[in-house]
Amino acid sequence: MHSRRGQSWSMDLVIAVVVFGFIAVVFYSLLIIQQRPSIDDLQDRARTIQERLALGQSGCGPITENQTITSEQLECLYNMNSTEMRRMLNIQGNFCIYIEDSAKTVLVVSNDSANPGLARYRTAVGDAALIVAGTPCGQLI
Image (cartoon, rainbow, N blue to C red):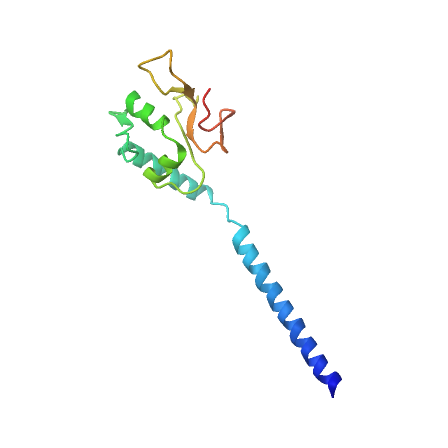
């Protein structure tokens, strides 16, 4: 009789270990594996951020005026850190904001056009993990 109770206890232990392992694998996969957003989703997010910048929701005022970029607002934007900008524009995930001219050349922007000798320049503003024109986003050059 004793051996039968021991076998029953062993089967319960095996089932418990299998259930625990299954739950651990499911939890790990949900926690670690992230879905990559689609191109359409990224384009929609970019359009939303562009609209928010045009409407002045960055805290710097509208970036464009009559289809022209205003340097004061652009300098304000480029002087923000990525955390502050993420909060003001309600951005989720990594981002990098940069300006291109009609020839698709990334423009370098000064953070202080009033004092050119003190100015620092950057190609973009956002998360340094992203690369724009061969430079980490937001890096001073």
